[in-house]
Length: 443
Image (cartoon, rainbow, N blue to C red; front, side, top):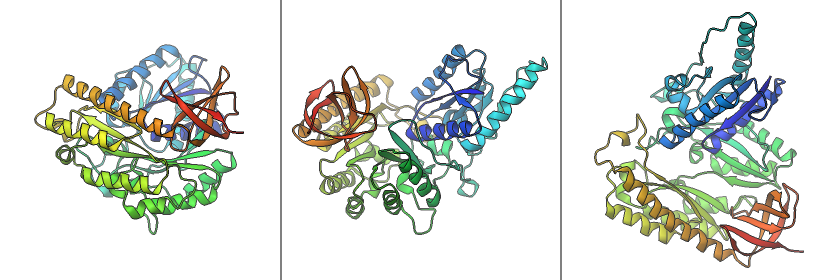
């Protein structure tokens, strides 16, 4: 059969989609573009915000219009949490966040059975809903639903998923209910996949998971540092980039240990959420801004030209003007290289959705706009510090006589000349143009 896949949301979702794609391909099926006459269209959904849910529903409707004769299968966090809502969209198959290799087999069987029914003129509409395996509230019910084969991508960089789930249950976050408790992938599986990615010539591997800071807590004699070292050993000439980190893990010793891994990129993403201690406490975060500052100091001490990005939520319930002012002041002092900023979006089943003193949406959006202006100024300031320096750029695409790629500290660079995709060149950074840095290749 011919199948397409569409992914919404985070890098973990991208990993899961890639695992599913590969499993279907290994079973002899062909991936095709949307609109090319697919037999099966898969939508991997997100539910982290109300906007994510809206986009997921929008994608499903759009794909149904594009591929009117295809079977529409939906999986991911949104369908894990709200399978009945997904059913109202007129899809054929609903699954959750479980094992994608097993899902490939289920989909293959479902498509074959549906084709047989149509051949026998049995056209009665039915929706297949797989068991939703992560609807649990205690750790004893947790099941490891990591893919049996970690995943790779057709892009320049590969994603390597080492962990899934989260035990933090922050007041605003729906993900633990969609993904379940934190669980680590087996180290031997991770190493095997890293070896495969290295053999295939990937120049960069992104280490990802829902809460990778917790990797190893359910394993003996393993932690994030130890697995990074092992990946670096089997993929010695490949950049390693790590996903979002909780500030509590970024101690002076941890950062110093990270710096001993020579292939690790000097770009780190911190799950910040607010620059006010009062707001952080209501969110259920386990740190204060002072700890974040120390973490950033440790990273910058140990990594030259270190870029630090962060997430931020504005308009969290109870956030008064004083607290938002503290956040803006924190952002100005922190000088993040980039930021992901979201107005608060109440999610069903979370503590924040039931909190008193909900901030009005226009206020949340206005605060997000103000925070974005501050973040943009910081991003520009960081890029200006890089002008005149030489950086190694991993090129990802070429167009109209120019090539674009990213430095180790994740600055997007555009240079004149067409360089081979997946190649790394030393580039002298010369300026800033349309939020990208410009540069010239060194001879």
